[in-house]
Image (cartoon, rainbow, N blue to C red; front, top):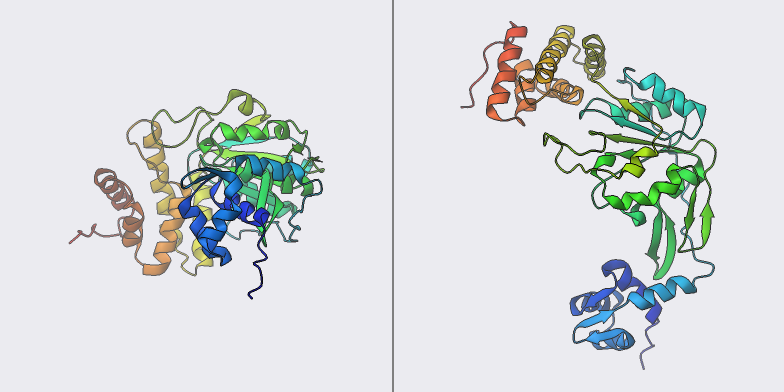
Length: 361
């Protein structure tokens, strides 16, 4: 006589609710049966008290009951790891870096918002400030789907049992780390779960009945391409108008600009030197080229800019092909044909030795 399957109804319900939510259909049940190595009929018998109608089961009520019954919940043990960013040998301080570093070094709780165009070093400045100060940094990339479970934490299925798992916000609170909310203007109103945390009050984990206070040094820094008011010109599709009460909890806002020509040239020289392709003339030409483009953009003459990040892409392409023009062309192919050609024509005027722009044939 075969030994009875050790799988419990609690384990089965925990697996289904974690993977599919509270509303379960026949396909979900078949997948669970296959996962646990039991028959479909046996699985449906385990779920009979959750039956709604043919091919439909509801786990909403039992999920709530399970969470309420956990008086001493299992918590996934913390994995000791180094969260201090590494120093970037190519980094050159500019703009608001010294101010950002001063805020972090003070260890005061002072939520900070950094806004600016794409690719101008907003995130990198925070990472490198933490690296220089030997501070832990937890970076969260925000999307429209980011919710309380992603940020604060929730129950996870571990070896067939439900266990509480801290989210990045709780980890940062408990470690006294810097929490970086990257691209925060992509968030929905679900990010309002951070309201009390942005007031410096910690957070109550209602599902396990535990209050987590912030340790000294904890701070929140957010980066965004907009000021949380949406993108009127359509350049940053997907950004949202953030709740005014949420934005008001950030003590100050830094407006990050692109680096100066001299600073940008230094950045490119560092990158190219570390790649073994240092070409000071090329770096100077690229810095002047991007500066002209950005000034024209500000005057409304064009709709696109060349970011510092894209200049670094060009240097890396140059390290591969050893061809200035090819490196530039490959890295501006993302723009529409008219913009791309105008960028190439402009560079041709700056770098008289670059040669004719090759055809696409």
